[in-house]
Every structure is written in structure tokens, then in C-alpha cells.
Image (cartoon, rainbow over all chains, first blue to last red; front, side, top):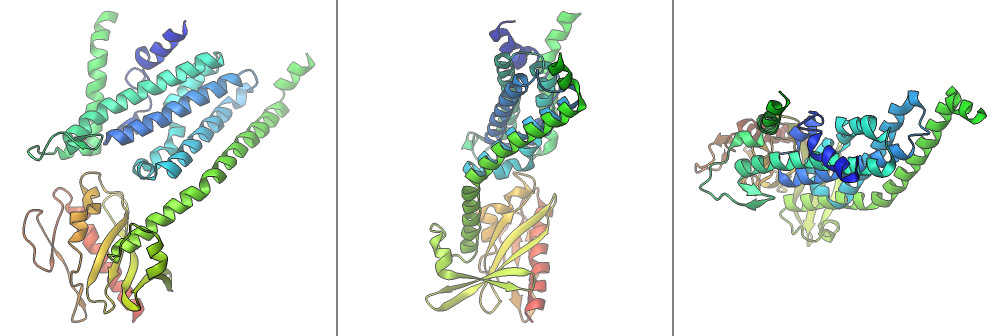
Length: 198
Length: 201
């Protein structure tokens, strides 16, 4: 596989959210505002890329039976860096995201990529794979939060798009709408492919 | 051959884990020390600004906090006293109560005679964004400004009316779709204030 293939594969073809249905917990939780989704996405891209890279660098040296422990340690370290960074420089967003930044540690996408890709492939490929998977995740978050913020608050990134005439849909700012939106998204993306397989 | 054996031993696993843990912890510690000061100052400044807001004092300059406000302790609760050019402005108490999803922390400042609210500030809340979360919006908090809270020694029980109705002095416009959150705020004020008055007596 070329580098481009690795990237496209992890971003679209094998997209963690709509293809592997991983990491949907945080995808449901932080998608009420686009800015929250964007920052969360960037946090995940950073963590995924660097943890994949590090795990791949160390893959020859990590003893097999404690590999999960080592992976978690590496992932957690990068997540804490993201958390501290947000607290120091973007306090408002850090407050909005609440515990979900810390919970990136348990995001299945990151462990998934570590197990499936970076523990078997060279560092640069793993880095690209990590960035790709992170972008794929961010893409889903942005799509869902776009719809939720537009209908729920009438804004995009905080700028008013729909004026006072628009009746805000309360359901869109609450958790259930995230379930609907994610389900619809997965349905739309996966339905044409299924026929091809048959 | 000997080296490969070492990698396969249990001792190597422990050795590896210790080394890598120490390595990452030192990186994290360094990063923490780098950001610690900034995070703490940010946190302190936010708190100071909220206290200034609750007294309706200009909050754009954090220096005002040191100029006007003193921190006092009352049993297990800190509270703030504000003075401006020798004149007592009032007292500010941190209060907290149960919201819909989690606790709500707020600051309530009252006049020196304990009769009127100066202003209310919400410090922390976990209500639904866009619904109960709107208790942090100015229009909602401003309703409490200068309201009579203590009349003839009794705490005034505020009534909730719908969002677009006119209110009298004992009524508060509730947030549409967030009756429970609105009610929680009123309940918090009532319960905590009576607690505070009891302790003060």
C-alpha cells in the first residue's frame, strides 16, 4: 500500500466511526456545537497520530504480554498533554468538553489503530494512518454537529445563520438527536456499498 | 541469542514498563509545570471576575478584586465582603444545589442588611446545553438583580412564570423547556440562603 492508500483507507474506506462503529460515545457527546467538535477532533488527531507513531517506533521492543499496558500509557500521556494544553490556552472550550478530553484515552479508535495497524507497521505509515483515522473521526463529528448546531441553535460556529423566525429544535441540542443523526449518517453512507457486496 | 532471551524474560517486561513509565511521567511532569502557573492564574481570575460581577463591580480589571474585596470564613464556607471607599457594599456567598444532571455552583451577593440580592452569578453547571444551560445567560441572571429576598424576616419564595410574561417583584421568568433547571436555581437560593442566615444568627 502506498502512503496515499493508507491515508484514504483509514479516513474513508475503513472509517472508524461509520465503518467500524468505534468511538461513537464521544461522537454523541460533544457534537452539540461545531467548535467543540472541531477542538475534540483536533485533540483526537493529535493523540492518534503521535501515539500510533510512538507505538510503532517501540513495536520491536514492547513485550507482547504487556503491550496493552504500554499502549494505554502512551495514549494517556498524549491525552493529558492535550488536556493541559486546552486548560491553559482554551479554558472556555476545555470547560465545555468537560470530561470528554480525558476520555479520549478510552476512545476505542486509538486502541483499535494501535492494535490493528501501528503495532505491525513502520512509524511513518502509522503516523499517516493515525492522522487519517483522526480526520475520519473529525469529519463525522463536524457533519453531525453542523446539523445539530444549525437546527438547535440556528448558528454555525457561533455565527447566527437562521434568524429569529426560526424555531429552535430543542431535541437537536439534547443527546437523543446525536443518536438519530449518527444512525442516519451511517445508513446513508453504508447503504449503496452493501448492494455492491451482494 | 543471549540478548533475545533477555527480551523474552519476565524481568524484561518489568524493566521495560518501569523505564517507559518513568520516561513518559517525566515528560508529563515537565509539561504540567510549564502550564501550571497559567492554568491557576486563569482559574483565579475567572473566580475573581465572577465575584466582582456578583457585586456589580467593574470586572474588566481583576485588580479591582484586591481593591474592594476581602475574603472571610464562616464555619466551612468562605464568603466575600466588598467595600468601596470605606462604604460597605455587601456580602457574597458561594452557594450550591442540585440541578437536573449535576450540581450547580453559584455566587449570590446581598446588601449589608441582607434584604436584597445585589446580583447572582452561576459559577458551574452541567445542565443541558441550550436548554437548562441557559441559566448562565444574562437575561435569566439579571432577573435576580435587586430583588427583595428577605421581607419581615422571611425568605421570599419566588414564583416561576413563563418566559414571555411580565413579572412582579416575586416572580421570575422561567426558561422554556427547562422548568426543572429554573426551579433548581430558585430552590438552591432559598435553601442555601436560609442556611446562611441560620449560621449568621
